[in-house]
Length: 368
Ligand code: F6P
Figure 1: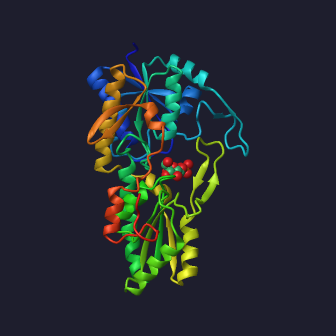
Figure 2 (figure 1 turned 90 degrees about the horizontal axis):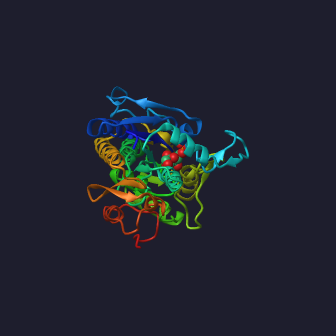
Figure 3 (figure 1 turned 45 degrees about the vertical axis):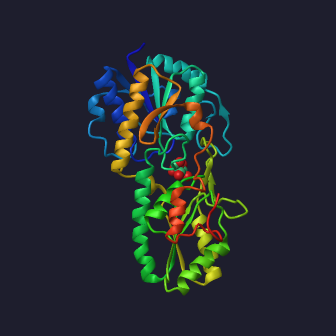
């Protein structure tokens, strides 16, 4: 078996990726005497044969660094690869056979793929074609199934919380309804955790379709009770009772073309019209993906990277490493991609938020 691993980072970046790369490379060298090749820009590097050896010195001192030293792409699915970049109506082709040949040429035993659900789906497809893969779950959305947390989520939640704290003070001064839109795609983990941590008065998540009446009732009740401001934390994927999400744009050559965004502005207009209270909007956007990882994410990233390298060096494949009840365990890749991990309606954080007076934009308490 070749004494080498390959590693790539695909999909949206997040804090902690470099900490994972560092752990993979250092574990491979220190514990197994194996070399690691870094693939550039996710699966694009495997298509375009762009990679480089990662020496110990390349990963030294990067545990605190945001972004990814390898670069990433969310437009390079080898099974549906855009023939030209940025086209209005892109055409796609299957280049997975070429990717398999390039991987052979690379002369490594296993690919360590660091990414979210899209990346792990591609990794699973390549595994089924015969490429040995070990995955590591990464995303600020925390939507990968079978793991309690993905790395990157805690850091993004910390950034969003800090922003909410700052908005709280100006909301109080101006007696306004402040609506903060956070990322998270089709799940509400980021809004739920930052909303609870930031003491949000309303938290709106995709799993709980909101009622405008209920939102306005809550805001007015606070105002009548002497709280002349309200903090609304809304997921970019939150939707009303008719189920519509607000789509900002379509990126047609991307692996998931839908880009959400704009729900906060839409809500602000409706709340102002109904309540006559002044509303303002803050969209946190890519701020949530940047910066240095929290201590929790650095530890999780190091544990994930170490375990993935150990599994790969030990000849395991077709798995990803997951955090389950405090342990890092191998789980079949197919299980990770079977479904998105949404927020269960009986989640303790929802109950806790309601117990401290937070509304989820529905009449009455949330019940499964
Ligand atoms: O999946 C991570 C994420 O940041 C989502 O929360 C967000 O919807 C999306 O990526 C944004 O993608 P892009 O960076 O392509 O705008």
